[in-house]
Image 1 (cartoon, rainbow, N blue to C red):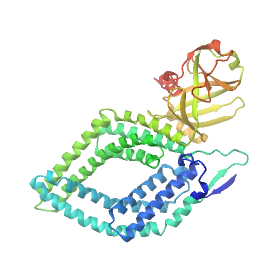
Image 2 (image 1 turned 90 degrees about the horizontal axis):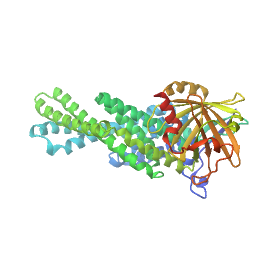
Image 3 (image 1 turned 30 degrees about the vertical axis):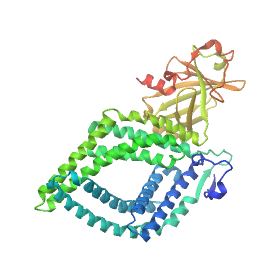
Image 4 (image 1 turned 180 degrees about the vertical axis):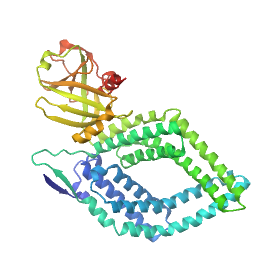
Length: 481
């Protein structure tokens, strides 16, 4: 085992003749560059706040940078390991709370002032009390922001940068280095985040409690956090981002107004003589919260808003294309039986299973070769028909065995025979769990004309490229049902 030590190359030295998308960068390097960018933005906001502690725009920039940095560290923790240590993460959490506390009070004041003309006369009295209390609390918290930044960030930033710019990559002597592009990692994480979002919305549809709807909001935030850094590089992500933003904002408004109603109720217990006016404020905001909840449920639960996430497939395709990754281009044929020439070649026994999901589905595959060699892989495919995007990586046997039970509802087993014929390799799949034989061939482009070889043509029933029922993931589902 040998170790390579890396430090991201300065921009002036790494700029190629043709600009390279950041998504094409090696994943270990790309995620560190992303985290360093958020640290740089936090540094600039920190400098502004030291000069003007009440600079609203600098406060917003600092809070966004901390939120995005923490999201980057969480989403890409496997590629960042060891990355920043536990102490750094605790300090970022403390900073997030300090800035988030000011932001929460800003939101509360905004709602109180925005609703002023809609309050009843009785409610206005209570609202004035809440405004006064929020302003005093905000001023107190704001005074603690700059010292907190100095204590938790300014004193540590050089160490943080060093931890991210210098890292080690393990390699095995004699084995080729497998380089995973950042785009592949982003697509994989997008797949996982969307699966969590689907589950959160389904749970919210069943219970519809404040906590369950709040969890759905967090799930929306996680998918948006994945998309934010790449919207300039992949504009196809903007429609999905807008959909997610609208849902998150609606849920955020619902929670903000609900918490305001609770704050008014709590204040009424502490301020004798103002109970009625504060109760009127509480009732006003609880009604507003219920209206926001109804809007979300109508758009995302009652009308099955998860279907809107079909946009994810387009985004995954665009992310992969932006990195210049290869697109899988193939033709598929239904056979009446396996040709003798195919059966004469050594077969690879393949077990495939799909993790639960609707828009993007991750495939696990175990391949056992004739010589006893075994390979384990994880794959995400996007698209239908002749050209599809495929993102694949090798995985460890232990991880495969841990995830494999989750695929019990969607599996196929087959033996694959690969037959070389001229410029192409034909793969004939003989399924072991059903009476089905398929042949596939990969092509250099979608418009390439292919002629069936003589040994195969008599066994072909028809071309089934693009027919969804012959996609392996759908075959697995139909067998399960």
